[in-house]
Length: 249
Image 1 (tube, rainbow, N blue to C red):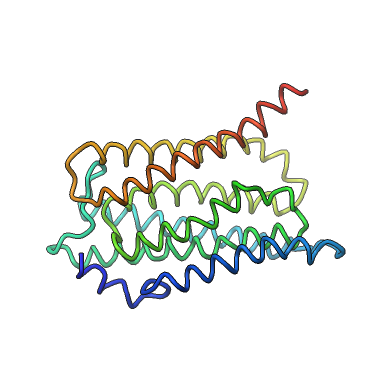
Image 2 (cartoon, rainbow, N blue to C red):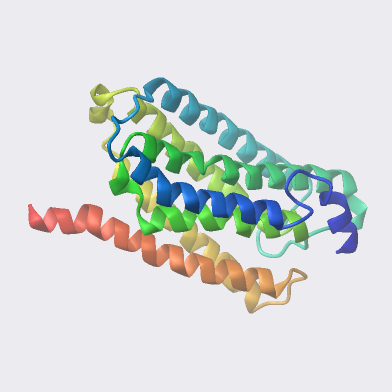
């Protein structure tokens, strides 16, 4: 494990938790102060920025999905139990660790989602779910790239990058304008896809908690508990956004 730390420590934002903690605090400050600063201002027109940003995130997510898939395939990774590092596969380990770092850094980039809501005065979208999910993911994946880059964590990156490719495609199309809405009838299924991924993570980590696998149980416990909170929050969002509104109609 020490060798793993030494290999990822020099990478940006990895060595110490302090930079990530400062980013998190700055994020919370923006969430608190942003709507207050925008209260008496006109919302910004960010159409071009949003189109470019969302499709850039589609490209980054697709790239990471490809790297997770190809590297795990070439390295004969197990979907059920994969240790963090095998000394006999240093080159493929570094390739997997590299895409894990990009996955972690993408979570820092995604904090911009919140900034765009604030600048456009879409404060109704600054929900607890949104802030909780965006704010905590950077800590989860800082720990992942710091201590267990690769191994079992590749499964989360693989599935999540696929989901985010679909998700940012939706956002990118929606940013093109109202005329695209008739093509975006599948929004509710996007939420279902997000719920499905959390269920897969729950089953995946749960399996490893009750079987012999050379992967830290502490990490599996954190992921398991985190997925429970996300399933509860996203299920509530799905109910309020789709089922409850249908009953009201």
